Image 1 (tube, helix red, strand yellow):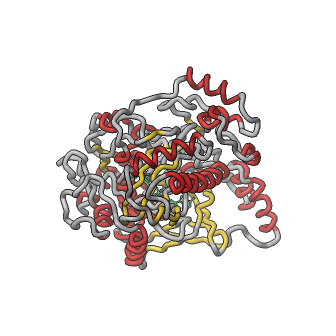
Image 2 (cartoon, rainbow, N blue to C red):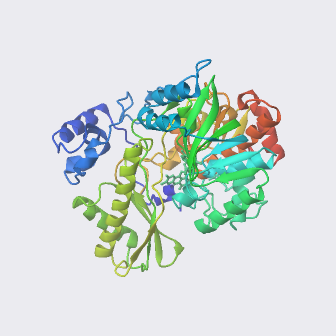
Image 3 (cartoon, rainbow, N blue to C red):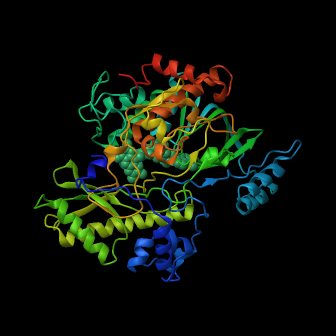
Length: 549
Ligand SMILES: Cc1cc2nc3c(=O)[nH]c(=O)nc-3n(C[C@H](O)[C@H](O)[C@H](O)COP(=O)(O)OP(=O)(O)OC[C@H]3O[C@@H](n4cnc5c(N)ncnc54)[C@H](O)[C@@H]3O)c2cc1C
C-alpha cells in the first residue's frame, strides 16, 4: 500500500509554516539546550525542542547548519542555490594544476592535496581511464531504465551504482510500489516500456496489459526484483558493463562539458570518459558538481527508513493501538517524529511492514545524512519497543530487519531548459517534446508528526490527470553532454512532489537512455537531439508517452 493510502482519517488540512509561527518556534527553541546547533534549534527539530523531550548527543551539535535562504520554512518558497564553483581547465595547464584548481573550487582541497602528494611521489590519483558511449550514474528506478534503454539501442554503456545491487529505492529502501503506472480514475496504464516490463516480469500483470488491478500495484519480493534486474543487465553484457559498490565521487568539467567522471571503487579511483553522462543519482550529484544550476529547498521532505517486524498476531484494533503506543512513546521523549504509522501485513499474515519514520535532514550533507541514518535506526527500534510493550499482538514479535539505508524523497532539482511546474501538471499542459507521462498526486510530506496519514492535506485536491513531462526537463543548463533523470530532474518543488514516484522516474530514465543512444549514433550532444525525435523513438518502441487515452 503506497503512502497516500495510510490516510484513514479524513480530517486533514493544508498548513504552511508562516513567518509568525516560525518566529514563535525560534523563540521557544532558542531558550533550549546549547547542545543543539542553531539550525537544529530553529528549523530542524522545533517540535522536539519545544517539548524538551529529545536531546541530541553533544557531538551532533557540531554538524553544519544548512545555508540561510529566503525560503526557509516557508513551504513552497524556494532557495535558489548557486551552482558549485567550477574550475575551468586553463589552456596549457598541467594536469596537476587542473586537479588543484578543481579541488579548490569544489572544496576538496585538503583531500586532494594529500592525493596530489601521492601523485608527486609517482602514484597518480586515477591511473586508469575507461571510455564508453554512455555513462549512467546511479542504478535506481531511473538509472536501470536508462542503462537498459541505451544498451538495447546499441550504445556502449557503463552503469555505476554505489549499492551492491541495482533497483535504488525499491531494493535499498525496500519499497515495492509501482506508483505512477496507472491513472487513478480507471487504472489505465499510462507508462509502458521498461516500467511495464519490470512489473509484468515480476508477475503482477501481463506484458500487454492495458489496465492494472489497482492504480498503485506492488511487487511481491524485493530480492526477486534484484535478481530480475541482474538478469536484464546480464542480457546486455556485450554492450553494458555494471560496476556495483562504486561511488561517483567527482567530475572534471571543461568548456561546458563533462570531460571525465571519477569513480571510487575497489580498484581505487578511475576516470570515465563518455559521450553522454546520465545523472540518475537522485541527488543530481553529477550535474551539480559539473556546474549545472540547481535548487534545493532549505527544508526538504523528511527521510524514512522502512522495516519489518515478525510474529505479529492480528488482535483488536491494531492500527489504533499502534498509534496510541507511538503517541505515548513520543510523549515520553522516545520518538521525535512519526507519521501514520502504516502497519501493513504486506508480505505475510504474521509480518508487518512499517512506514512511519520521519527524520528531517539535509540529504546532500554527508554528516547530516549519517546522523539521519542513525536517527532512523533509533526510531525503528523505539517503535518496535513501544509496540512490543504496549500493543496486544506484538508480545511475541521480533525485529526482522530494517532495509539497508534511509530513503530520501527530495534533495537537489536541476534548473533545466524547462522547469516543470504544478501549473503544468494541474492544467494538463501538453508539450510537443513530451517523453514521459506522470499521474501521481502532489505528494509532499511535512517535517512533523501526522497521525493516521502521511500528508497534512487532502490528496484528492492535488490529483492531476495524466500529464506530460517534456524532454527539456531532463536537460540541464550550462553543461552540454549531461541528461538528468529521476527525482532530480527539472521541476518546481510542487511538481516534483508528483514526478518523484518510482514509475515516473523509470519513464524519465528510459527517455534519457533513448536520447543518449540517439546522440551517440548521431555523434551529437543530447542537447542537439530534438525532443520530438526522442518521443517518436519511444513511441515506436511502444514505450509512450500515453497521456491521451
Ligand atoms: C521513504 C520513501 C517512500 C517513498 N514512497 C513511495 C511510494 O510509496 N511510491 C512511489 O512510487 N514512490 C515513493 N517514493 C519516491 C520514489 O521511490 C523515489 O523518488 C524514486 O525512487 C526516484 O527514483 P530515482 O531513480 O530518481 O532514485 P533512486 O531510486 O533512489 O535511485 C538513485 C540511485 O543512485 C544511487 N546513487 C546515488 N548517488 C550515487 C553516487 N554518487 N554514486 C553512485 N551511485 C549513486 C543510489 O544508490 C540509488 O540506487 C518514496 C521515497 C522514499 C524515500
